[in-house]
Length: 417
Image (tube, rainbow, N blue to C red; front, side, top):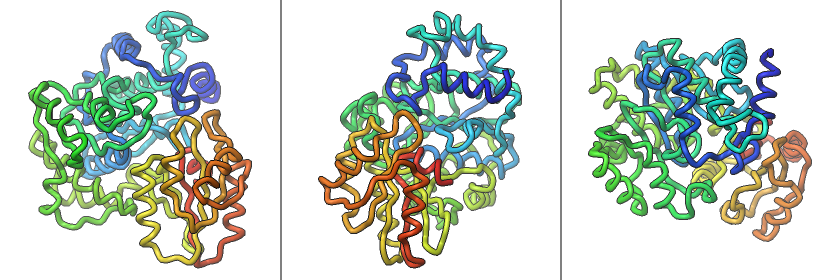
């Protein structure tokens, strides 16, 4: 089985939330626990930081990894989803896991993992999810490579997320907003409760924002777990302005979290200097390869790609669009079919030309259906059968003083970068 065969196996034969949605979601950690046992519990063989949240967790994960790299540590980084290459999910010091390691791992454990899931990997109800496979792969890799510390981002939620078998030095929860309500709950309190599931007994947790709707959820959870709760919002005034390689204005909420987390890790014995923090934030893109967050692809006209795909993310992106000088606004926009699109569409500006499109995945919302729903909210534009076609028409229609924004889904952004 070569690397291409391996990817076809992972993508095609196993349920993958990123592509097919809720059908891939598991309501327990049994498979992951079984996998880790088969792998001799690699999750216990490296130190870690666990990061959850609705928005910002990917940025914080990459910034934390960058700061630790600048401090001289060998840093594992596990994130999702990937944009261009599956191996983006698993990195050490910014370098992706090798194709050979991925293929050899799958070949070695394919039959054993089938046993762990209670049956053959083709067709059984309890077969492993794509995410369970990748978590096992990442933990095995970080353990064998003897990383000094690993930054582990949750995939979905927290309490039942496959990554939630680790006992981290520090847990971080970035933000709570509406997203994946069909799986996590339809109130902010329920969503926060799922995210709070990463808080461990006698642990330390940093919460980025004091959101009145969910503050009590976290405070009740830390009482039960006898954990220490810190709000990075409380430390904003004492933090000097810091330059960050990620240019989205919304990063101002994430930077204090990274700085406070760095201080906590310093108190726990990691040698992290203020200079390492400054360099790590400034060079985060170069050191980790992060893309898709206010990703400037062109300047004349301005073309920005951003993976914002929920209410809070969309609000933040358009707040920055409004503060960016431009003449006319063009928006290349696509979504997935398991979202409540009405709330998102209600937030989009009416004074823009839209290019509705469908990303090349099964979960993508049909572009004609999206365009029809958008018209109900006064949004004007045409439907295009591909992201590439939509962007090409936007470029054709835009002047050098215009702004083209590509957003609505990570999958749409993937196809333009």
